[in-house]
Amino acid sequence: MDSEVTNGPGLRDERITNLLVFGFLQNCSNCNFHEELEALGQDMPMQAYLQEDCDDELQTDGNRASLSCMGRIEADSESQEVIQNIARCLAQLGDQMEQSIHPRLVNHLALQFMNVNLSEEDRRQCLAAALQQVMQTFPKDMEKEKTTLMLTMLLAKKVADHTPSLLRDVFRTTVNFIKQDLFTYVTNLAREVRTSAVSRLAFR
Image 1 (cartoon, rainbow, N blue to C red):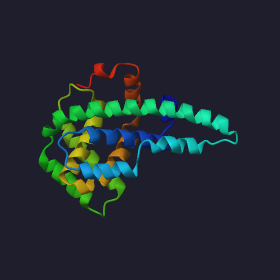
Image 2 (image 1 turned 30 degrees about the vertical axis):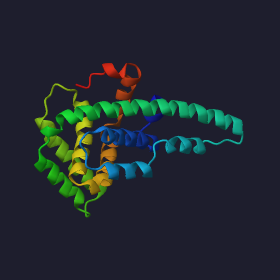
Image 3 (image 1 turned 180 degrees about the vertical axis):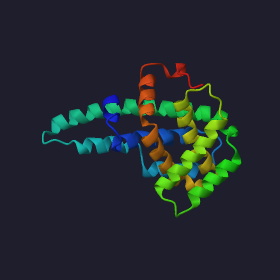
């Protein structure tokens, strides 16, 4: 995973970020958007990425391509498990902290996402502004980037909870935000998880 996801933003970066955000939302408790999340998952099945990667690298020698593909699947399966574990831990932390996010801020952010005249970059800026406000009210004893990553996805969860029909829009914006601003941290965190027991990770 390390050699494949650190070469700058690209298709694989987006796939990893999709899996992270989807896994976070999937593991959050007390959600009102189960149907919308299920539909989203059906439209972007994570396992399909593996087959796409294999198809992209077919060689004239079918046996060599098959062996190469098998290696990719094994590596990608491990990477997916790591990202899913990170998502699960951050969702548990988000469940503990979501009451600290003021409903007025969530309502305002949801209204902004409802504005069809906003571009994707406008939505990203709205999410960033809301994140800035929330960061000011949170304790400073947790690593800043970890807090930022968790709160970014928690804001997405709160908006989707407020208005389930916004799930796809807020999911896309959150993926773009993390891919642009936090992806290096995500890859570093993935390395940490791969080299230590998940149960010992300090997410608090």
